[in-house]
Length: 76
Image (cartoon, rainbow, N blue to C red; front, top):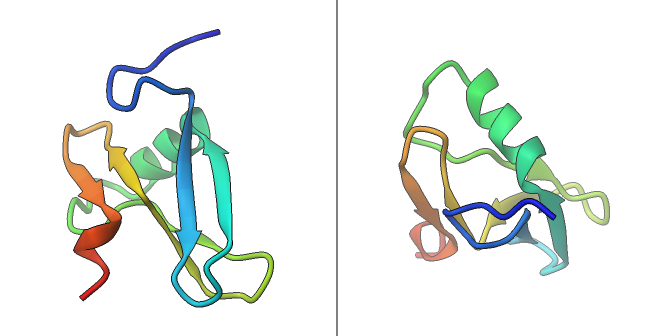
């Protein structure tokens, strides 16, 4: 199994801020979305919650551009 230096895992944990559901998304998928974002470093890749339609944010993600994003950055 391939390990990633940024998290030590091959997936990224996402949490919906609306309903609280958690989902593990393969890191390769998150990295692809990060690259498709055309270099907008202000926002980490986000996904839509399949449970309620809210936005899902990563608990922790180190991007392909070495930018670190934490869930606490979005919880104010």
